[in-house]
Length: 109
Image (cartoon, rainbow, N blue to C red):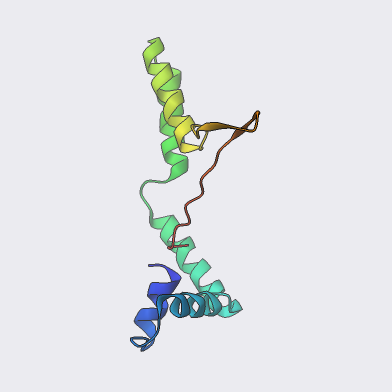
């Protein structure tokens, strides 16, 4: 659940627009005691998670060390690159080559 949805579920906001609700959700989340409690809950959730990014990376590294074919190595490296965002497209803008990164904000954070 994101901040907007949490605010919507906690308060009667039927007559308010989405922008107003989003703003109020962010303001509420920024209160020190609210943010601290959210951080506690996220930490508990992370502890309970059976599959994490670190576990995925460790498993891929184990597979990389055991791989015996070049195609296996390439597949593992491609997956690791994707997990770390290294597969972003490269664009040329006015003769300058730069990595093009598109950040999509997750409303759950």
